[in-house]
Structure formats: C-alpha cells, structure tokens
Image 1 (tube, rainbow, N blue to C red):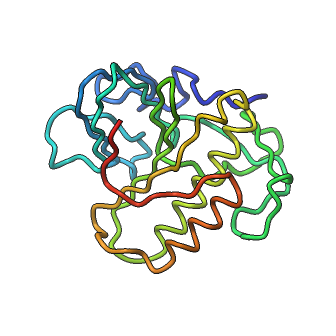
Image 2: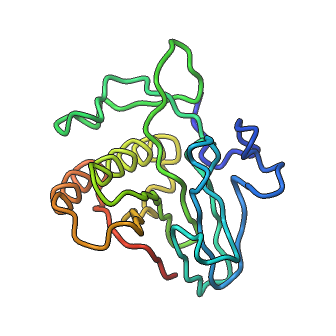
Length: 201
C-alpha cells in the first residue's frame, strides 16, 4: 500500500494526535517555535514547543501566515521493498521502493524526524545531540531514504523539497565529512543538506 506521509492519526500510541503533548500533524501560526526530540529514546515523535526555549533542539523563525508540521520518525511507517541499500553509497535509486504494509518481514526505512511544509516548500529535518561520531552520515542516510520514499508516494510535491537541515546543538564546527555527505545526498535526491540549528521562513 502507498505510504501517506500526512496520515493522521499515526500508529504510535504516544504520538497519534490524540495525546495532550505530542501531535504528529499540526499547523503552527506562531512566529517563533521550537522542535524537541528529547523523548526519542522512548520512541516518542519529535514535538513542537512554544515555550521553554532552552529545551528546543531546532528553532523555526516563522514569518509566514502558518506552516504545517508533520512528525515522521515513529509516526510514518515505510518499509523497504526494493533492493536499494542505503549503506552502500553507490546504490542506484532506481532500486528503491517502499510500502506502508510490512508484507514480508521487511525493515523500516531510515526516517528523519519530520518536515515543515507551506505552499512554497517542504523542509525535512533531523535532530542530533552528539558532539562526536557518525551522526552526520546517519542523518544523510535518514534524509536519503525518507525523501526517496516521499518522492515515490507524493511525486506531485517533489518539486517543493528544499535542502534538508540537520540540527545538532552539541556540534558547532564544520563536520569533517560534511562536503562528502552533501555531495552524496545531492546525487541521490537532487538537493544537498545543511547543518544549522535555526531555519527562517
């Protein structure tokens, strides 16, 4: 079955748009808000926060009339059905396919935290809180499969996708593999990634 990235309520009992603090799909009109992924270890989706800025992992300056926020990780189920190998940088994107039903015990694709959408763009984002390690490679792979799946199932919106953002407040330098990861992602999905903790609309 097709993957619906805008489905609501999602299948996560802790992020199914029915709970008090975690909404997997919502419209925000505030001119400044944050996104927190503090509860990721509990398999709870990243959530929008309007207060307590010290807890924000990613800050959005919203100068538009409103944007739509959609949590993806722990909300949108997309299973690998093709022969694409996200761990092989030479994999052919024509081998990628995904499905919302796990028919043959397939693995879930790697999914980024979520996306911000308005009529002019779709911004995918990933939150990391690690000062060391392969966090940027992991983020790029999450963008790679998430966006390939999104393009597969929402081709009419593919032209709205802009450079996805990795937000990591624990790392304030240039990552040694940043240029390489940007090139790989651009080759795969048509846009490179950015590493920054804020985004202005």
